[in-house]
Image 1 (cartoon, rainbow, N blue to C red):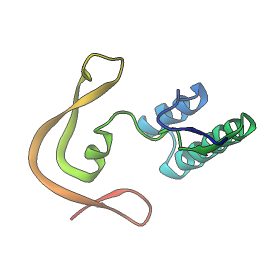
Image 2: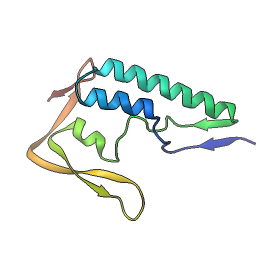
Image 3: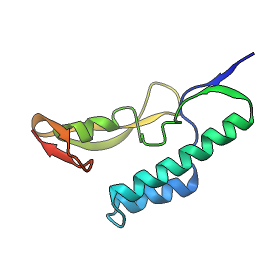
Image 4: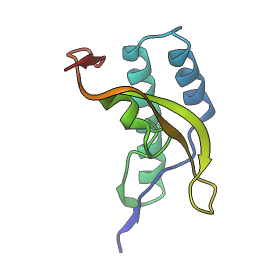
Length: 114
């Protein structure tokens, strides 16, 4: 019998600290990417030890369901925290602040204007 576990997993405290440092400008995207990779590999190892055959990355990179919008679309900023339907999943309301346009990722991962 093969086991699978998909979806998001609780984000480790240590990884949350890296994310806070990144957001405050104390570390760069390379250091954050390295930390996410380490914590993801730890998750994979634990799940394999438990016998899971199919796993996901745990969604450690995502803050909320619309988080990627803020990095892919210019003119949009994060707004207030909103509860998604009637569960304990929250997201930041997108707020249109300027003309909407596409961004693309630069070679080093930073958003670039298109």
